Length: 84
Image 1 (tube, helix red, strand yellow):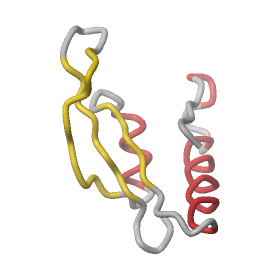
Image 2 (cartoon, rainbow, N blue to C red; image 1 turned 120 degrees about the horizontal axis):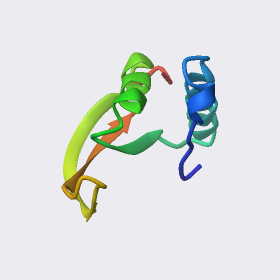
Image 3 (cartoon, rainbow, N blue to C red; image 1 turned 180 degrees about the vertical axis):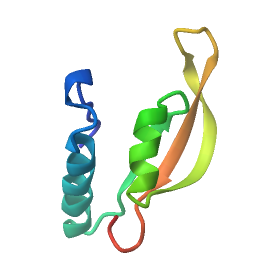
Image 4 (cartoon, one colour; image 1 turned 90 degrees about the vertical axis):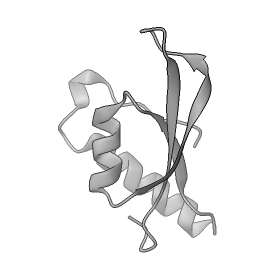
């Protein structure tokens, strides 16, 4: 999976958590280490990842700017060893 988004209407219903769980499960089953990148301004998404046990392992500047015209900062997260 390259990316996923949850509509505003579906927020706070567990949809993002379930999508993350399914994607993590599929990656782990395929022998992959689940990892993702998220822009630092996506606080709701970051909350979901951290609540699911994912850990931020690095932060780096992106090659693009946000709508606020600042250089985007990308956080890289990996799933907890137990599969999040």
